[in-house]
Image 1 (cartoon, protein in one colour):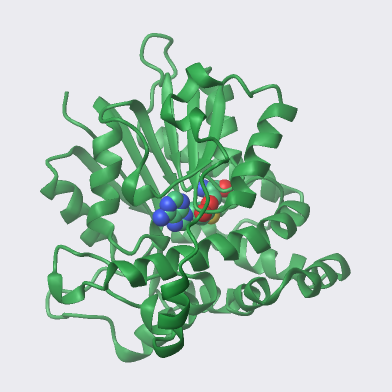
Image 2 (cartoon, protein in one colour):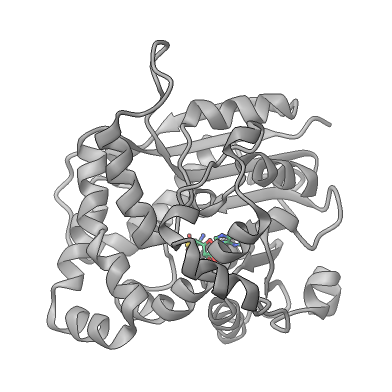
Length: 342
Ligand code: SAH
């Protein structure tokens, strides 16, 4: 494993989220709710929230996933992302795992990632890796080495245990690290993968800059993420009721302010990345949240939820708002891909 990931392996599972005692006291004066709705794109300094606020958010994310990942895995398995479905398909419970795998394959196809021996990815980073479902799948698919990072120590440990159990310990490794300050050298990876982690990033410019930094020349970058709808030419922000809906989701899922797909594209353009493409897959994910809610309302779902803890329960309570957000067109499920120039 040490040959696998350099710095990654030496700190494997040993990095922990520092205890932010000053932040605990700060949080008493400044509710997390306000912190996590702070500005997302720091190119605009008016939107800046302080480094201490970012630490507070990171701590909340880590604790949220530490607490909730086990119950998710028990009910839904190793992939902590939406499935990709044919629009209007009637979906059986058993279809969801294959829909989650399909999401990964659709994203790879959208970005034209080659499966040819000479061109396929050999070194991959999974940024915001959850319990490593994508990392292991990608490693197996391409025979590639893959490093996953997450804020949650519980997730990193579970991801590594699953890799060992699946015979992949010499190919994939996981560690606790911040996507906004990745522990990797410049140009290390030929596929940079972020599946549903971008929505947690309080500084989207720093986020995409780090994705671009660790990408090798010619590497593909894939971001699949929750966005708010693009604004029209005459709008300067979402409507108050739309913001109100997203704020409630932010509180439940530990998200900072949202941005649009168009915002992401502008950021990628500002970094001179090439072949920038995006698509709205909101219709393709529509069956997902109703299915998650149905599974939470089973006996197993309810009992595990009640045993899990307040952060998980609070997350579950905002799940219907995701459906509302998609139905009202405020939330978009976006894929944005690009390539680092050679
Ligand atoms: N991509 C995974 C998990 C998605 S859940 C999957 O598809 O299964 C969101 C993940 O983003 C969690 O693992 C969380 O720890 C991670 N995350 C959120 N903010 C992060 C940050 N700043 N740095 C690293 N990981 C982060």
